[in-house]
Image (cartoon, chains in turn purple, blue):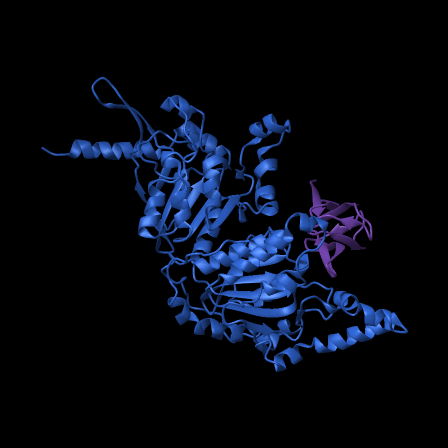
Length: 73
Length: 522
């Protein structure tokens, strides 16, 4: 079981949280949607696994590279 | 009398060279999951095409009778060979011999300048550096009896700089790399690093620990995560060595042999008039929604021809070599999955890729969906304006034909950077396109402040003005004014572009040769 840190690629604010701890996710599933520059930018699971932790909530500001979720594969 | 004894000696010494650093060192190297430099060269080149130069170079010792007693081969292997039938120069450090450091030869074989770089320059053929060495050592002072100024004697990098304007140069980071060899990795048109095996840094963990008291692993300091994904120091990641050689061959398949030749054209099995129906609906009507730009590009380009450069760095922009009707093109596409915004990374990525394509006579196709430069305090602190304007300046210097397909947004300074103002200024819009200095939503309140504030119902007035401006923003109006050269059915994008790419080939032949830059980049 490896822990995979999921990072935001972009600076913005959390628009929607789509996944919750315990959810099974497949590669390419949307975990969180970041709003930046009037665009909705999905943060995707790059590998499949179980969501262990979601580290942000709606309206939170996020920085580029910030860990926003942790998945266990 | 015959020379057979000496000839025999040549063959004997060649055998000794093939043993690299000896069975034990080779076994250690293999155990670390790495091929020897000789195995690497053979895996990279067309089978049987390697012709080695300087195989007898090394340190020999002789017995009392003047017979060869021991021989340590030079820690660098190089020569010429073929990739897809075309000649290339190739070389790499032999890590099994003193970790690939220098050996005090009269002339350097390669790696940090030397014969193989000179050969690539003199013959005008591509150079592939297989890098697995850490460069200088304090031992040099002991050997010479004095210390040397950087860039001394054989260690200059002037030839490497010359090559960047003349022949394709590829660098592969296959082991831990610092110092001079690391510099060579950067002095290339395209670089790749093997995941988990390659690391690159200005100086390794012991130096960092002494300087800052921070203990880091090699991987944490300069593995692919840092050097490729985060910093863009190296362009692409290889999953293993075989994948690395496959990608090198792939990259070179798009490159001409030198700047005096056109990139190789191939017969195209994919019908030029293939019109993918999915292109009609790929862009969501909701402006905030993202879509898969890579899929869009793949539907337009020749099937299976898209090869991404820097796929994990500056992901708001996709840069890829591809083919249209068998002819090489450079594709630069906004990636709405990452906002499509030009941030400092995307700006650097665009500038480098545009220069690469221009140098090797590869026409450019932009697919624009760009809301502008990345705003905010952090972005400004990283010099977004300077980086963004530099990307645009590099665009001004381009001599290859450029197309812009405006897929959706094209705004501001960054949007202008995806438009070719220098040449034909050929812009093809999709019906989903909209453009301007800044989007209507953000601009109305600022531009019509007094009018809105003095209205009986300011909010209603603002909405009214917005509606009016949005109607004017229809791409049909701009097409009527011929202020955009064409508005097309998205499904026609492939046949439309293919025909123009075919038609511009004569132009490319008129501008072969080195490109001398003028001016000072901002």
